[in-house]
Every structure is written in C-alpha cells, then in structure tokens.
Length: 198
Length: 233
Image (tube, rainbow over all chains, first blue to last red; front, side, top):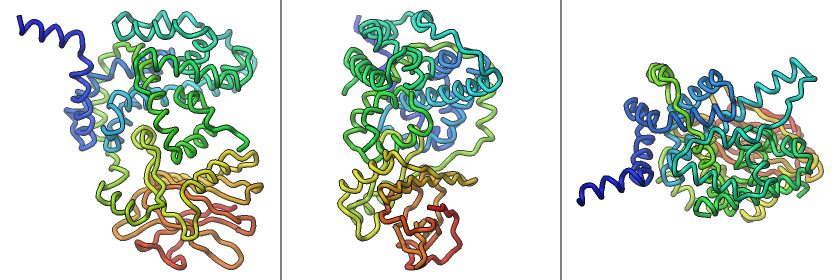
C-alpha cells in the first residue's frame, strides 16, 4: 500500500522530483557532457519546440529555431547558475527570445517583399486551441481566463505572437501607456493565480 | 528621466520590446536590484505560459542535435570563480554587479571598476538610467569577432556617456580591459573590467572618442597597447 501511494505521488507531482535533476543535468552539459545534453533535450524538447511552433507557426521554421535554441543551450550551459533559476526557466526564456526574434526577422523580410500585405489581425482563438489538456496547462488556461479581455489580449499577442507592445497597441487601437499597464496588471494577476512567488 | 524604464518590466518579461528598447532596459535592469527581484517572478510567469504549449518535436531533430553538438565548441563561464568575485567585491565596494537572472539567459555579466572620483553607487545607477533613458540618447556599438560587445549610450543634454561592455573574451592572465576617454589633452583612464560591466562618464562634450585597450591587471596610467576598440563620442 505504501509502495502504491508513493508511486501515485510521483505520477501526480513529477515537477518537484524532476526539477533538481534537470538543474544538475544542465550543469553537466556546461562541462561538455553529451549524455546529459540528450537527457535535457528529452525533458525539454517538447516545451522548446512547442513554444517555437506556437510563436512562429511554420513547423519547419520552428524546428530550425528549436535546433538553434538547443545549440545555444549546449554552447552557453556553463553560464547557467542553478542558484538563479531553474534549468527549465533558463531554457524556455532563451527559446522564447529566440522564437520572437525569428518571427520578427521573418516578418520584416515579408514586409519588405510586400509592403501592402497587412495581416488580417490576430487570431485569439488559437492560443486556447493549442493548449493541451494537462493539469498544469489547465491552470494556465484558467488563469488566462481570469484576466480582463484587454489584459489577456495584451499578454497573449505579445507572448504567443511575438508582438512588441507598440504593435499590440496598434492592433488593439489603444495607446502604448495603456498597453504597458495592461501587460503589467495581466502578468501580476497571472503570477498570483499560478502561485509563482513574487 | 524621459522614458519610464520601470514601465517596461512586463513588456520585457513578455519579450515585447524592440531590440533598442530591450538593450536600454537591460542596462537599467543591470543596476536595479528591486527590478531584478520583481522580474524573476515575471519571467517565471512567462515561462509557465511557454510551457503550456508544448508539442512533441520531430524525432529527426534529436539525432541532428546530438550529431551537431559533438562538433560544437562550448563557451566558458563568464566569471571564472566565485572566490575571485568575492575578493573583488570586498576590495572594490562600488563594484557594479550585473542582473542576476540574465547572466545565464542572455549573457549579461561581469563588472567594471568605477573610476576613482565616482559618486556613490546609487547616484551612479540613477545617473546611468538617466543617460540611457534620455530623449537625445545616441547608441553606438562595437561587436567583436571573438565575441562580446561594447556599447556606448551618449546624451549631449546630460553631457554624459554610459559604456556597457558584455561578454568579452578574457583578456589573458594578469590582464584587464581599460577604458579611456580621449580629448585634446590625451587619454584619461575611466576604469577597468574583465569581461564586461558598465560605467558612466561625465563631461564628455570635449571628448573625441572612447577607447578600450588591454592593460596589465590594475590598469595603466597611460595606454600601453593599441586600442581593441575606439568609439567616436
């Protein structure tokens, strides 16, 4: 009975058990451990690829960017300091930055090619559409639902579509000061809803 | 300050700043400890949003990566040892430390020894933010083939310039990088750094350019080697 209880605990709360290991693994990657790199990839590949795919849309391009992200992880892992955050945060922060830069770079190239092709506007439904059903993701969805419409739009256009706050302001026909405030209110509310320590 | 850098906290955490604002905000974040604490929570929140859209990658990606890393060189840690950092911190109380969280994420790191007649660290930080946020700020950057950048933000209105060096390769055993402001009277030392850091220079209206040289540890009174970078003021 105690064995099955322990197992149950492991299944429902893998994060707490897995997180320290991942930090250790990333430190090993920093010392050139290729086997540790493979394990980090196995743990975070879906998170990094999924985020790149969400922001970039084109799966082939997202795959390229995910590859660049993991090469960067390999190259700069020695600069990861577990005292300053988790390996997952480090990798996903890097992945998001890279995905956003890629989508803006590609967008600028497209704009140069076709100055008059304005996008038809953001598709708000897609965010929820691609959110897969797990406990953790349910929480994110629920917390996003708890925002005001403007807060949610400001946060998701920026984070999931790579818009700058100035672009968000244009898309939502609001002034930039309002958008910055809504982003702040939104992220504070999300933080508290998700139980991230302030 | 003409731009409220603090209002950029949330947009920064969401990667919603353009490249120019991002680097100006990072310069602010480097020296704003309160901001760093709040930013850690914002960044972690953004990570949760990112983790909510995971998607299994094509299996070929794993094979390609494992093949590629086996021939890809790795960077060294920015700060070689904690002991060295502690020693410097004790010896040089006005040391400017880089943003904690970002050391890993984007490679901000290192420190720069302030010049002798500097104000208190707080005053300096306020002054740095003011220059970076100035309406007439002009930005110049030098990127090195060997890695690292030196950026200069200058404001004629504030008669000041801020130098931010990031991720330069280690200058070698017993060597440091030294920053010089050069005017008609010649070069004046502005301070030294190892791989990166930030500093403010005042009274730059008469200066021609800023130069960076490699010098023996502790710095030289006058440059003893050809500059690795010069930036016109």
